Length: 296
Ligand SMILES: C[S@@+](CC[C@H](N)C(=O)[O-])C[C@H]1O[C@@H](n2cnc3c(N)ncnc32)[C@H](O)[C@@H]1O
Image (cartoon, rainbow, N blue to C red; front, top):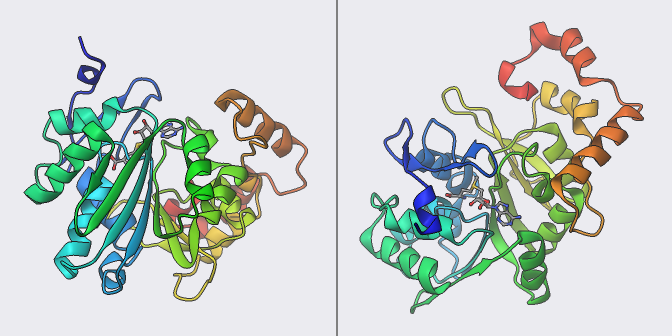
C-alpha cells in the first residue's frame, strides 16, 4: 500500500474535507471547516484581494499540507486581478500529504485551473506559467526556510499553519519565527490561526508587532503580525494581560534542530523559574470578565 493511502478525507462542517495525522495526533484543520479556515484565518486577514491590485505578489505558505491556503489565496487573487503575477514558495515536510489531497480530489471546489496547478505542484514540486512561479520545497521547514532566506525571497504574505504548539513546537519557536521574519517584506504580513500566548510572545520576540484577527462563530481569534503596527487590529485587554503570564514563555530552539521533547522541556523549565504570574492565578483573578475565547 502506498503511504498516501493512510490519509482518509474527513468531513468538516462547511462541507470541505481535511485529513487526520496519526503521527501528530491532530486534524489538519478545525472541524468548523477547512475551506473557511483558509479564507477567514489567512486570505481575509492578509488582505490578499486588496494586495492583488499590486503585482507581483510574493506568498510564503509554511506547512502547505493539503494546499487549502495556497488554493484559497490564488483563487482570491486572480478573481480580483487576473493579471496579478504570483511567486509562491510552499514548504512541506511530508510529500504524501499534497499528493493525497490531489488523489482524493479534496480541492475540487476551487477553480479547475487552480486544482491543475496544485496537482502539478504536488507531483513535480514546481509550476511555471505567465502569471505564476511556484515551488514546493520538501523537508523540515527549519531547513528549507533557511534556503528561502538565503535566496533573498521576501514575502508580502506568509501563511503560518503548523500543527498546534504542544505537538509541533519546532515551528513556533523564537528562532524559527525570527527566520520567518527575515523572509517578510517591511510591509508584509504573517497570519496564523493560533492565538496562544506562547506563539504571540515568540512573534514579538522575533521583532514583529501583532494584532488579533476576528473570531467568527465559535472560533477563537487568530493572529496577524508584521513590522508595522499600522492597520493591525489591536489586542483586547485580556489578550494583553495573557501575554504577561507564564503561558507567554516562548519555545526556543537555538540551533533550529532540537526535537519536540527537548523544546517542550526547555520551556517548562523556563516557566518554572519565571517571575511572571502563573496563568491559572491570572485566570482565577480575571475569569468573570474574560471572553472564554481569549484564554487558550
Ligand atoms: C495543520 S497542517 C497544514 C494544513 C495546510 N496548510 C492546508 O491548507 O491543508 C500542518 C502541516 O505541517 C506539516 N509539517 C509538520 N512538521 C513540519 C516541519 N517540520 N516542516 C514542514 N512541514 C511540517 C505536516 O505534514 C502538515 O502537512
